Each structure stands twice: as C-alpha cells, then as structure tokens.
Image (cartoon, one colour):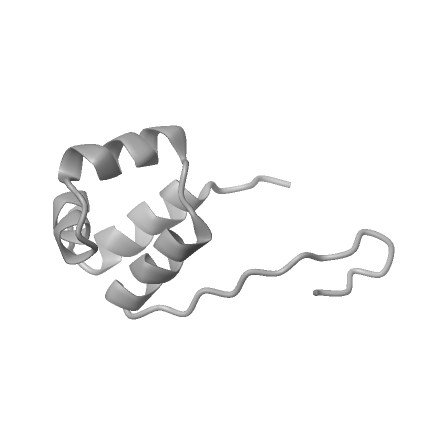
Length: 73
C-alpha cells in the first residue's frame, strides 16, 4: 500500500487552492523557510496540521485503525 506523507497531501491541497507554501506560512504565523524545512522533514504537529486544514478550508480527521478488526478509533 502506497502511503502519501502529510507534506505531500498538504502540497496537493495547496496546488488545488492555487496557494504557495509561503502563503500558507504567512496565514499560520510561520516563516516560509521554517515551513519549507518542515515539509522537507515531513515534521508537523497535530496542532499545525489542524491549522493548515482550517486555512485550507478542509477537514482533518486523525484516527487509528486496528489491524485485526479494521476498526477506526
């Protein structure tokens, strides 16, 4: 199963919204350089991802799925 990183998912949404990483950084109170570094490391906190979702007018659902029953928790 191919897994797409959070950074890649955010970049896809940015492209669809015609927004740059710099614009996202500005709207979330970060520098473009800092946010670019986070994208290169794919290192985001849950709080940041929720802020991105708010700015990008998206919903973000975080859950675990058990392997034995496929139950989302």
